[in-house]
Image (cartoon, rainbow, N blue to C red; front, side, top):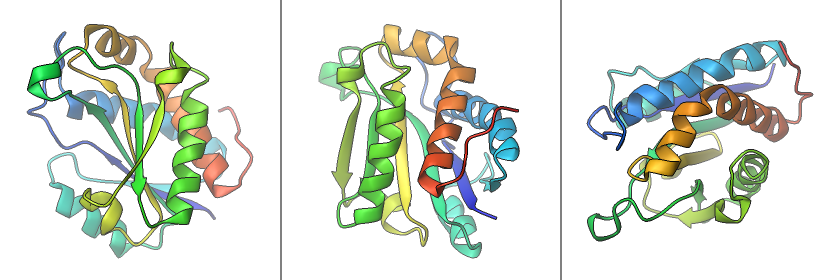
Length: 180
């Protein structure tokens, strides 16, 4: 059975501009994914919301997962706070599989994000969750929680984002996506 490790943000200190936290909304999105993953026959585990990124990496590496998906929201640097919009999908720069998977996630997000041209894939070597996980990994920043439009979009589209990310997981794993 294909499997994914879900790693919603554990960053309860990252506040949305309109109330709530990154950890809270990332976990709601993950919750919304679950019925679709089950219906599609995808096995999954998820991190401990009270843990750290290292705990998430260790839990993922302790299993035999086909894919690791980290779910976050973003914030601009202080000098640009509130001015940047759009999903960013990160992958480990040297991973061909990671780039393929990030492209799948980004292409699917373009179907639901209000301005598809703002959905980007970003290669990196600095994010531990991409660098240190055994399974091919993607870290998705679903939108900017310090931008009022993006923060409202996340809050108003938790179910749609969860469904879309579950569709991406099915696409990555090469299994048919099934509605619950």
